Length: 252
Image (spheres, rainbow, N blue to C red):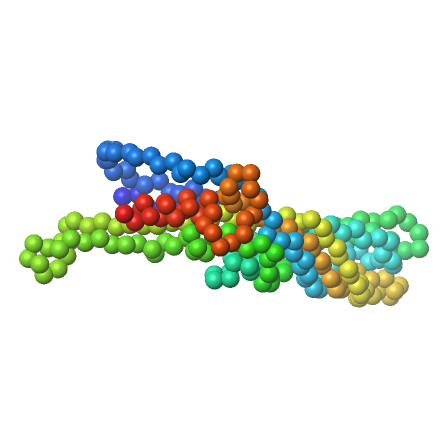
């Protein structure tokens, strides 16, 4: 038996599944089913979201400054994850994290060169968001159900219980399309307070109060009838036909 004895470090992102022992097998029968519907995969905009994060940071300059000449700010996201809310397809819980990269230009006295100092300021914004277009859940279920296992047992010969040597099961997984994020625009409105002065009136500490505003587009891939846009509800459409037939087949 092979065991996972690694310490868990050294992987970037999701690591591959560890190797396992292989059992002997043989393929007995194959049957192919092609749905008689013409589907295409399209990207649907779920909504454009305005998100605000109020963030306070303390910046310590490497040397004392007499004046700040300019502060350049660039916003980038390190995480943007939208999680559907079970039972409410019009809502998602949005988790956004990022950094404000700042290049601070300052002078140390009334004459001399302008110095540069760069610093990254992390920020977070978590909120529930209402969508313009509902999240697509092809089977009407919001997540992959690992515990959805139907156990099959045969009655033992004495009729007093289950046969423990023969058994079967039906497991079911749903591969939902993820919700993707795109940062369209950002704006940082800030107020700076200088602190920690020396005998010459220079400072090396800045307390920044930032109002970080983000415009994020949420999209999701989904199946629809070829050549058609989004159709109104009420009737079973092409994608629902395919998913429901698949569900009926595996339940036979």
